[in-house]
Each structure stands twice: as C-alpha cells, then as structure tokens.
Length: 168
Length: 167
Image (cartoon, rainbow over all chains, first blue to last red; front, side, top):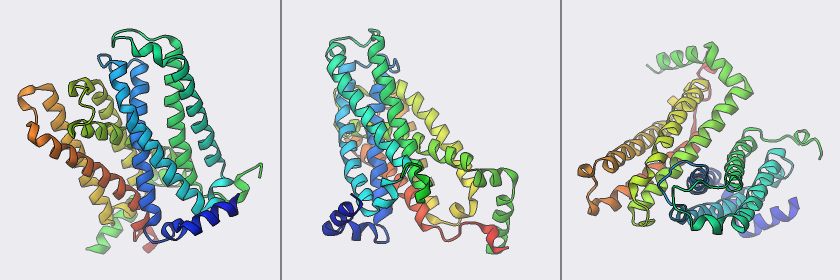
C-alpha cells in the first residue's frame, strides 16, 4: 500500500511538487479552503436542521450544499496529495485512521438522511419543527465534521513515530 | 532596537502562562484545534455570503443569513482568544514574521467587510450598490483566501522560534 501510493505520487509528479519549498503549505491552504467550504455549507445546513436560522426554508438552504460538495472534492484531491507524498506519516497514524472513520460515518449518515428524511423536509415550510430523527442526522453530521477537523489537526501536530500506532 | 524587542519577547516567553501554553500538549493542541474549527466556520460563512454577492445563491435573501451572523461573531471571538493563546505560546515566532502581519491585516479587513455587509443587511439605506456587489464579494474572498494562505505559511516561514534561545 505504502509503496503503491509512493509510486503513484512519483509517477505523477505530485511527489516532486509536494517536496518543493512551497508545495506542502500551498496544498495545506487549499485543503483548509475546501474544509471551510464544507463546514460553511454542510455545517450551516445542519445547524438549520437543528433549529438555528428559522425563516430560511430548508429547501432554499439546501441550495448551498453544492459548495460543500465542491469543498469535499477539493479536500479529497489535496488529501490524496498529502497521503501519497508521505504515506508513512498517515497510514500508521491513528489520528488519520480516526479521521477516515469519521468521514465514513458522515458519509453513511448523509446517505441515510437523503434516504429517510430529505424528501419529507423539502415540502415543509421554514417554521415547521422537524422530527427528532432528522435532527439526529444533523447532529451526527455536525459532530463528525468537527471531529474530522480535530483529527486533522492531530495528524500534523503529532508527526507520528511508529510506536504511536499501538496495533501496527 | 532588535535586542530590546527580542529581550521583551524572551521575557514574555518566560511568563507562566506562555510556558503553560507551550509546554502543556493539551493547552496548545486545544488552542490550535479551536482556532481551526472557528476559522473553518468563519471562512465558510464569509465565502457563502461572498458567493451570494457574486450572484450565486440569488434565491436566498441576504437578511435571512442574520442568525448565522450572530454565530459568526461568536466564532470570530473564539478565533481571537485561541489566536491570542497561540501567539502567547510562541510570541517571537509570529511577531518577527511579516506573514503574521499579512494574516492580521487580511483577517481584520475580512471582518470589517462583513461588518459593513451586516449593516447593509440591517438598514436598506446603507445597502451596497448593486454594481458594487460583485467587487465587494470578490474582495471578501480575496481577504479570506489571503488569511488562510498566510496562516498556513506562518508555520513554514518563521526565522525565530523562541527569542529566549538567544539568551
């Protein structure tokens, strides 16, 4: 896995770019921009579902979600650049593994939200109180994305020595 | 002059609070994480408002964002306090780096632009002229992108980490 990622990075020129003097901070900045778009749109939508910002219809506010999707894809691209350029710093790092877990939980939560709740709330006006199930989806989503940020900070704050990963 | 500044920064680094913030992993990590979380919300809300001014999301009336602006200012306060903690932990690292001042200027400009926009939302007489809205939105984006880039580059461009290492 580690070798495959490194080969990919080296064959595509990502490795050289990331190890140039400004490669890493430029991509980190873009990663944070993507994250801000994601939090600014998905986070606000979640807060709306939790009851903040009454007056904005759910359907209208849902129109900001494409910004979150754009931010998510920007993060997948930049995240892949980090991972493939220094796979040993990520693959064995529990903070990275936890970050991926929370992203998966957020993804599953989103699928369940669209499967079971979204069609119902589309028709509601902005004053209607939402069912507890919808609020639970929103709460889980908001928590997961905040924890993704916390774990993301942990990755860079603790550059992992290998003993950090107690199951490796 | 340089010696006096470094001496003052070194004394600041030796205060109990600075030592606690720097040497307690939990205190530093908490400040760093809260700073990132608050920045993500503040930048995200500002980028959405800027997108609205640029003509996207035109279905949403600007004044409907007001409840989120209250939240925005809470997060801006958190940026200030967590940023102050990070600055106190490594004062020389930031204060001797021009990139820090660039971040400070861009951040302040971004917040001032939002204040102006907020007044425009509250009072229709103060509203931004339609022909200026796109320029206003683009300036907001430029401020926040500069803030993020300067913030990240701060970690890579410092020439001094601790002033006390010179004494």
